[in-house]
Length: 150
Image 1: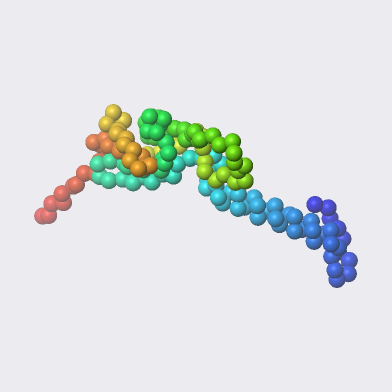
Image 2 (image 1 turned 90 degrees about the horizontal axis):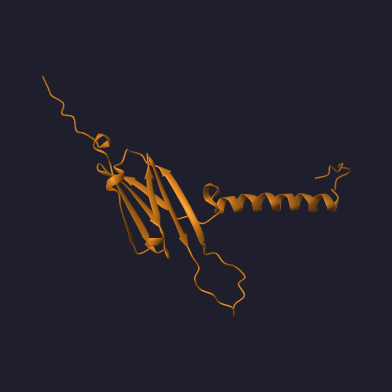
């Protein structure tokens, strides 16, 4: 932005126009990052992670994804979900003006809150929601300690 000296009580129209353009650009940058949480510019499923005494549960929204197109792995304390959502319809008689549904491959990795038994992990998909059940290792499970009185 060029510096324009302020003279008198009014600002030149070019200064106001330049200021307006800068403000518009600032708001556009803000709202484009606000719609993409955590900087995820590509499509990825939303996750819910919860924990019980016996297991860590991960629920992921995967509508329209065939479960056989998912790859789930546990390495150390990291769970990784990979998959691809494909747009299989082809329509040559339409001109799209806006497409808000996301397609493409995704990878989501998260650090697990407890040590899990990778050999006992199970995954099921129902009605567009993937549930990954990660049983905790015995040493990670809560143990009740009895307090003895005197």
